[in-house]
Image (tube, rainbow, N blue to C red):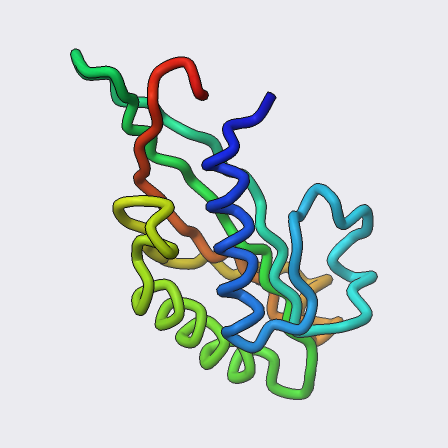
Amino acid sequence: MPNPRLAQIADALIAKSGLAGYLSTGLLNDLGKDWLQEDNPPAAYLGDAGERNEYKPTASISPRAGFFFLSIVRGDNPTRLFWPLYKALKDAIDADPTLGGLCFLAQVTGYFSDKTIQAVTARVHRAEIFVEVEYRHDRGNA
């Protein structure tokens, strides 16, 4: 059973991508199609990048969870269209770094853009936007 707090955090991040101006959002693995098949850009799909747990002699565990948004922007100037979306996503998370009290800190830590010939010739700016979240849960609830 997945950690319910982690699922809530993912939902909160997906909501932030919608506030930032992305039209298509959701969980990446639930998408079921390739980025070239995206028919409603700009799109940002949340992927799970893993989790690291920090154990202390307490009744709780403090994980750091990694996420990334697969950002898909198509158009005549896709890179220039991406930059304001990236800033809006950063600003939305910076304005609520606890994601409504779900965590201690959520922050966008950067992005990596795809520069493959396939993306360039398709006039698509494809990037992974990295988000790190630190939160706490009781032992036995992971």
